[in-house]
Image 1 (cartoon, rainbow, N blue to C red):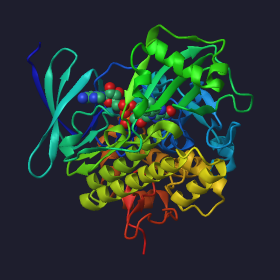
Image 2: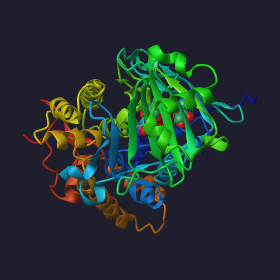
Image 3: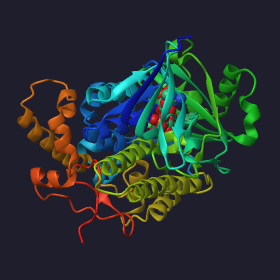
Length: 497
Ligand SMILES: Cc1cc2nc3c(=O)[nH]c(=O)nc-3n(C[C@H](O)[C@H](O)[C@H](O)COP(=O)(O)OP(=O)(O)OC[C@H]3O[C@@H](n4cnc5c(N)ncnc54)[C@H](O)[C@@H]3O)c2cc1C
């Protein structure tokens, strides 16, 4: 092992380069801050969580500027979901386009191979000025009585280093080793105590058009299956079984998965001509258990938790990447506002935690109702309306909840709002761009140049108003006495009286 010790400074250190980490890092770098992202693996790397929501691809990803890159990648379009679920023994389908918040170009999401999707997000973070370092594993955080002060890591050559930072972001996923350092304990859900056994198949059937890209979820006696069409030929298939039936996935995983498939006629039928992939990143059968939890705290001074490091709820409606990227947006706003000294730390992070917990809580409460298999879909639609307090129809409330756009968050609903923020951000950048007359392709020199940095940092709110005009949007605070998004969507503002 190399004994070299490196000591550095950064404004923000992000631990983990999944969707949460790379989104947060990008949104903070867009305000001109110095961000280092440490990722333990060498990308591309496999990850579960392949079915996305419109809120992620048209909301947060448009704001970070990566949406067009994702659109070019050729991922399968997911227009909604098809379920064999509840008292109705026929499959029923919902389309995102039912909601006026997800019309036209925003009425779909994607089914993604995560190794490719996560790589695009991480490369984009790099392009936007984040100092991304792969094969850097964070061992611990350093702190004193007042706040967290930085991290220690080991790189691929065995070099150990420390980075002192104003903020450490734990985006290191469900296996986080450092979340406790925010003073948090993880509380596992008693209700969602399940196990998943999953693998990949080639040659599986597809739902009839226009639903061939939908996620298919099928309930059966021991639990439920997901069936996600990743490419025309490749399908992700997973069985989720209740904890008291854990014995069904013990022993040989191949036999266990085949026995579970045999219990579920619709999945058996869809896989009748398919063969299981046995090589490469999709060759392994994997098991995950006890995966629904929330931490007691999401932040302490100097440290914030996002994505699976903070909370995760059962995957039935594919909310994991949505919660991770939404949490990243909220935390980035808080960090940006505190660094710009426009909002004090306590107020900024209280706003983050309240909004994040609310979104998690809405999914949690709805999913508890969804697991009642003795009722039909109308009852699920009604539950969605109840938990989201939506004033639209039951069906629309359901579709907005499972599309990730029911939070009341202006940046998420559709391209229109995310575009509004993005336009504001880019008008601001190009106004400054003209000042420095920089012709480089990459945003890095522009964002890092001191003139831009100081222009972006000094009283960012007031300067943005001057450059962008008085268009702060008409957003209302989500909580009494709370904050609203700033004009560029990257920070918080006080609502005007
Ligand atoms: C069975 C199952 C099915 C799921 N299906 C879906 C789905 O269909 N759709 C969906 O949206 N979500 C789904 N999810 C959830 C999804 O996998 C996660 O919510 C999502 O990946 C969280 O993103 P993240 O950025 O928080 O963490 P991750 O994607 O886990 O990224 C964390 C990163 O941190 C790195 N890291 C870890 N430790 C360190 C360290 N010490 N130092 C440096 N780097 C580190 C890791 O290598 C990793 O790259 C599913 C989850 C389960 C369990």
